[in-house]
Amino acid sequence: MRHVFKATKIGWDEEQEGVWFDSDFYSKEEAEAEFKPYQGTTQRGYPYTGYEYDGEQYHDVTYMGEFDDDDLPQNDTEARQKRKR
Image (tube, rainbow, N blue to C red; front, side):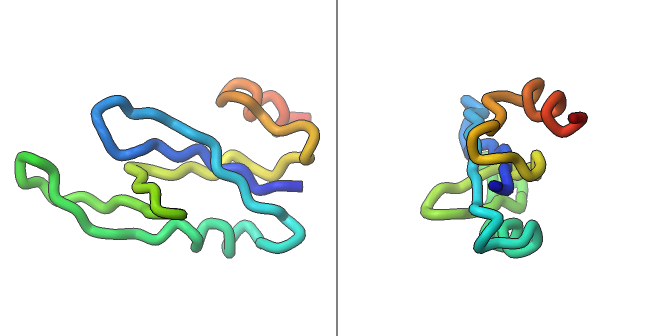
């Protein structure tokens, strides 16, 4: 089982990626804590809070749920469908 997160990278492209943590080693709370908050400033001088994990910076991070290793969702729609089972 894996805890799966959807994370939006910093930047204008709003590129999203899935980040997962093995449930055998991380509780949901421990996995969430791996995303370290930091304070930044936009090019126009507005403050924001971002999140960093493994050298990548993210605008936001969303917990998608816990899924079997062989049944990980490939997108938001799949994640919603698989959570309802």
